[in-house]
Structures are given as structure tokens and as C-alpha cells.
Length: 494
Ligand code: SF4
Ligand code: SF4
Image 1 (spheres, protein in one colour):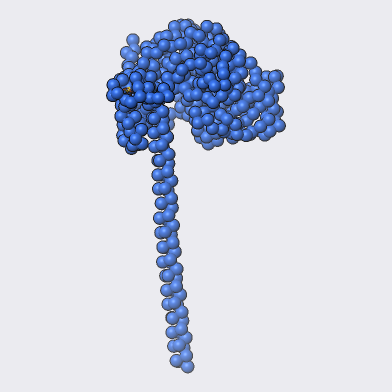
Image 2: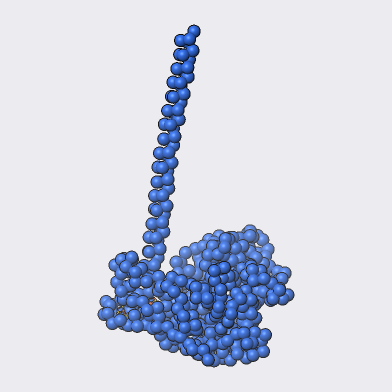
């Protein structure tokens, strides 16, 4: 029997998941226009390999990965490319970015798919390349290219592969429903991940508030070839148990070192949705063109989980789910704790969109925050054992070095401190601001350091050139004097 670990702080929240788990996963209707940002992942944006006017088939690659940290992008449906230009993207910054727009033709005509007959004959390198080409990123919400996390460096060995089925934020239920309905596919993907990482042990972690999913996964595992090689571990429901470092602590009883990565303690974690996507890519040749998205909230009459093609306008999903919303109503992408508001519902669903909330109060600050009463509740709730009150003082005073000394960058922005603060101080906003400012200052410092080095090098080069010029002049003068002396000596003889 495995002895589970624990993490400090955290919160027991009302899950609010029953609204969206009453009916099976449904397919969102095909939209007339799909807008696909070239950057739906962490790393460099993909580069278009199509042009306006091109006809594309469903699953066809339309943008290639650029550099190492990047993945490819594919057409989610058949149709024509109508634009490659800057469009608003669903991002906290509210900025625009380069997107490919497809006018769908309604035929859903697939490109030729090339599944791998038996992945067991493929090398780990080949599997990772296929996963990269299939455009697969972490579907838990972060969007990190999955092939990189399946590639421990030569200095590391993967001891434990953890599949994250915890989904601890209220309202979100896409992983829960995926485990209930597609357990076999998830296990198929885990088998491929085990081969790619050569992990010694593999654990699927599921929170104890998902009994149907736990049962579905256990039943599927009992007849799966992976039976005996994978453990299903049920963990207590406590937010933010689904965060990477917190879940690793619960499962392994080990802490990821400050500033370190899970691989530093021999652990790699992937989302269960990512495992499913990998199985589709390797066993069926299907690139990542859709995902399960929870559409829920008080204003959503027919809440549930939809399989949505990337690029689908959020408003099409909201209409499908019979949502009543005004233009001024906040629409949140993600959960109420870590999600962020979107300016409107015209934005597209992307690879990182796990949930869309309408009519839900975010665990967000009040307009008029009150003074800190030094109650210490924020420190008690922090799952990383930070001192949010002190961080807040330093961030507010723009005393950024001090905030960094108080481990600002260990903050996972879980929002627990916000949630418990009786003064409703927007703590996380201060921490996000302080992080951005610190990074900007570091970049500025690096830029000015580089400029200084360039200036110093230029000065040294000019000084050397001056000295060389003087030396050449001296040599020329000496040579001239010698030749004149020789000439004079010649004349004296005659
Ligand atoms: S947001 Fe940061 S400081 Fe606040 S509880 Fe979470 S980890 Fe701690
Ligand atoms: S919870 Fe709020 S009021 Fe209490 S110490 Fe923290 S910041 Fe201050």
C-alpha cells in the first residue's frame, strides 16, 4: 500500500462539476470559419506552409514547427485558407497574433492518415518525432510541447511517469469525462509514453471526487496489456492537488527542488488528455485537431463537455450549450481560480482551452480592496509555503529584489491566498505584475550588459587598430630612413 505524501496549505472547494457531467461528451457543431493561432503552445510559433486560396483537408499540416521548442499545426476540417493575418487571440494580454483562417466546406474530408502499425517496433526518438509532428502539447492547460517532456536528457533517467487525472479546479470536468468514456485510449497512450520514456513505474493519479472515472479506468486496466505495469492511485480532493509540483509531492513524497524541474527527481508528469491524443496520433495517425472543453457556469443552460475543433469560435460552443449571455458578461477561459477573463466570445478555442465559464464569479479581487489586517490566512493557505503578505508589500512597493528574495518565482499563481484574504486584496495580480516587471528588468539588464560588452569590445578593437597603425607608420618611417641612408652611402662611395 503506497503511503501518500501531502503539501502544505491548499483549500477544499465546492467542486461545482455536476452541471457539466450529466450527459456524455458531445461534438460541437462544425463552424463555418476556423481561426487558428500559430502559437497555441509554449515556445516558438509554428510557420505557415500554406497560402491564401489553398484547399486543405482535415488533418493536413498547415504550419511547421519552428526551432526545437515548437510543434506543428493542422487543419481541423477541410476547406479553403481565406486569410493568414493578425487576429485577436485568447490570451490574458488581449493581444493579436498571426492566425490561419479556414473557411470550412462542410465535407470533413480527411487527408491520408499514416498510423504506425506497431509502435513497439519504433525507437523512442521516432515516437517523439511523430508526437511533435502531430502537434501534441500538454492538454492540462499549459500547452508545453509533449515530445520534450518525453525526452529526458542524457543526464536524467525517468523513474516515475505520472498521469495527471486530478483536475482540482472547480467546474472543470473535461478530464473526468474523458476518463469515464475513453479509458482504453488513455491506457493505449500511456503504453506509448512508457516506451518513449522507459519509465520504471507508471501511476495514474485521480482525485477521490471522481468515482465513475476511477471505476472506468480500473475496469479498462483490468483487461489491458498494461495491466500490472500501471497503478491507479486515488488522491484526496484538495485544491491545488492537480498542480505539477503538489501532485508529485503527494504521489512520491518528494519535493521538486526550488527552481528545479520534476525530472531532477526522476519524475515526468503528463495530463490524461495528452495520453489519449498520443494514442490517436500513433495508432490512428490523427494529429491533434480537437480537444474536450467544459462549457459551464450559471448562465449555461445545457452545460457539458464538447469535443471542439480548434479554431471554433467560443460563441458557437456557447450557443450550442444554450447560454444566455450579455456582451458585458465576463467569459473566463480556465477555472475560477487560475483562469483569465476573455474580452469577448468571438475568440477561438485553442489547444489550451480546457474550460469556458460564463456567469461565474472568479475568485478575484473586489474593486475596492481593504487594508491588510495581517491575519496570516494567506500564508496558511499557500501550498508552496510562501509568505504572500510580505510578497504583497514588496510587490506593491516595487521592491522587486526583495520580492524575489521571498521566492516570488515559486508562486504557482493558484489563487488560494486571494480566495481566503478577508481584505479581498488582489494578491495574485500583484505577484503576476512583480514577475513580469522583474523579467522585464532582467531583460533590460541583459540588453544593457550586452551593449556595454559590445562597446568595450569596440573600444579595444579601435585601440588595437590605432596601435597597429602607429606601428606600421613607425616601420614605414624606419624603412624609409634605412633606404635613404643606404642611398646616401651609395652616393658617398661614388
Ligand atoms: S498564488 Fe502564489 S502566493 Fe498565493 S497561495 Fe498560490 S502559490 Fe501561494
Ligand atoms: S490574508 Fe489578506 S489581510 Fe490577511 S495577512 Fe494575507 S494579505 Fe493580509
